[in-house]
Length: 275
Image (cartoon, rainbow, N blue to C red; front, side, top):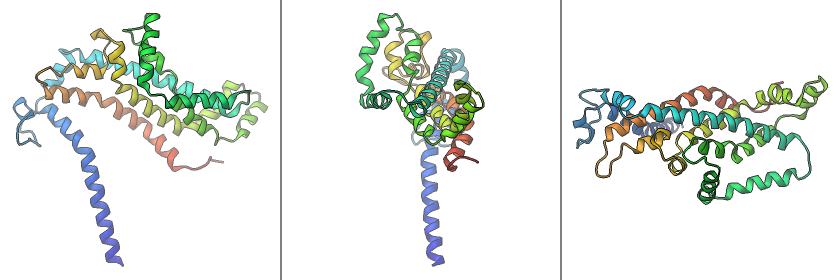
């Protein structure tokens, strides 16, 4: 029995190790390609450990190719949209859960039904609308459509349903305003969901390519995914520069995940509320 158990554990560990290598290797390859010398970037057979390390591409990307501007544009757009989504999703989830008014469920079901509409269907009407108000080729054309997230509202509503109404009643008895109850009593109970929503929203906005490609026309307005596209030529692509830009571009996502993961994991492992 012990022998069978040990063999099964070995097999599980081998599967986990193989899966870990499979997921980590593309990231490793991206980083080492960014620091290889040019002759080793596309060499056959591939060079897994560079014989010489160079950081020249990082200097070129940050100084010569306007990459810092693209990086800043993506940072502030993704941050602005993420903060807006956290606020709108949490407050609307709270309203749809803890307040009773006529047509509440119908309105909520109407919002959910919009999730079945492919994003590509709304791009042309949205572009025409933004063109009418003169927002094409501006970052507001990306930020404004992302202020509300139906998925975020649904996620926060599900979380708010697990929060007892006694919290709200106790706050009202103590004379707290509705905003005080929301910010001081409700939001602390939803930290895990807010962390998860922040990670999802930031990643979506950070990697957003198609919509910025449609609404942005000037290079100074480009976001990071559009800037990375500039490294690809019609007949030849400098893979070293592409990998360098990609390496820099994943840094904010890693920072956001590391910053949010403790609250995120804690919320997943906990069940119920502390007494």
